[in-house]
Length: 421
Image (tube, rainbow, N blue to C red; front, side, top):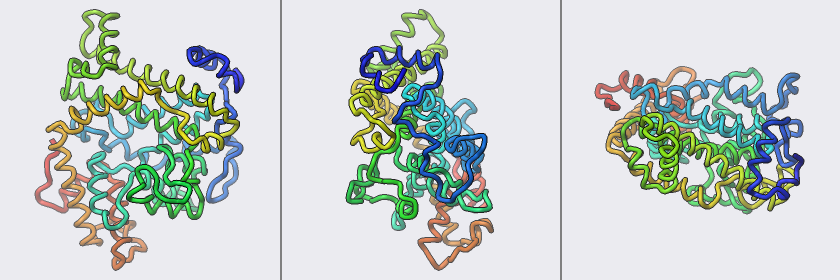
């Protein structure tokens, strides 16, 4: 199947074309990111004789300290609530699998899509979004805290594994996708855009952009867009599964969402009398499948309309080319709205969030007041009279903590650590 033939088969035939691609050799579209034509790394290195530039990025991410810590960072449920709930690491692996599937279907570079999926949550704090909200409040007068900016800090500064540079020295394409996978950060004039319209672009991103420009006013590559929508798909499916497992809602409750009601009916029509736990799995399988197939169809339609000839054409396209159709976009919104009410704001979850918020704020205030309590390596070159630099260093330290490490640190420093149950 050659580039340019998509339009000739029509939207209804897109999945048939995909099956041909899966069965045959890997197909690469002209609008995919080419590792051989990468814009390179901030610090020049010789090419690997065994791996492409994007494979090398993926491997560096997997071997990073920040990646290992994802194993013990909260997704929704904190670390001790059960072995079967998602952590940041298991969520990341699920995103990676979906991203690779989508990248292959769309002729994009699977290795770059995988690297971006594996790196997208590196900047998250302990205790999920609660930790991020707490750190953002603590840093409100000093640039705030943003997990995407933190991920960039990790891979360009905070990881210290190599003799010749700080960070992981990833390719431009990986760094661009890490920062811009959800869309442009600025308008053409450089003013903050979208979620950054009011607060402005985080300082960490602007600082790096000044030395290794990331074209903040354009969309990212197709591979980055794939990683972003794979994150949405994995989030929806996993949180439905974990919420059901935790007893926060039931399959009957999910029937309030028309998209899910139809899938539940489909499961029981095909498997009458099926045990609930198997029915849940069948539902989750169908959610992921429907979403993935819809993204393939809608993205092929958008790509066909754009007629791109290069990855740069994707960046300059004016809108995301990897997207849900209107119907599935509404289903995604309905699911997220349901989960917000029944899961993220459930009294049980809110109780844990309150305790986690207190842990993070207590730690922040104590380390700022007594920097000597920071580990020696975190005090290196630290000017304690520079309040902004001190607070950013403390935020970096806390953001890197796992849930269990943060709890242990709180118990060492305070006599009344909350129980997150």
